[in-house]
Length: 172
Image (cartoon, rainbow, N blue to C red; front, side):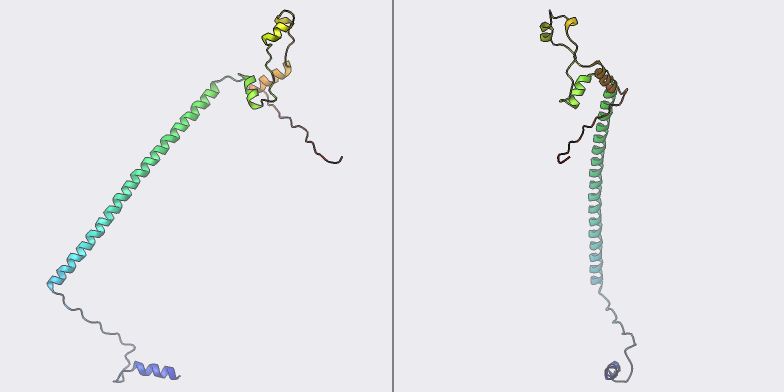
């Protein structure tokens, strides 16, 4: 309570009026001389000119960036178009190649270990068998497996992959 009374006393001035709620009077501005007003105008004009130059410089910088990005986009688009045409050309070449061609080479590329031997007798083998005629040479390979490989290469049948039995070591 004592603190509140002290605050109220401070708010009262010598005449006994309460000045806490009265707005303070603003100090009137002094009238500037003509030269000071001109100097302020020149300073303000200089600041606006500097801001304009700064905005113009940033605009030119952004414009240069836009051109740079446009060139990058154009290069990327050209590169994508080249890749796309190359891929379409390769697809067309693959479609033009007849199915079932180079079966033995394709089998050797897929699995070189299990690739079958070519069903052709070599010249040494021909000379070994009684005079070297083709009638006396025993045929290589199997007609059934050769036909199946040929049909699989031409997409006439689907070749199933045979999974071998898994050997588990341990007690039985």
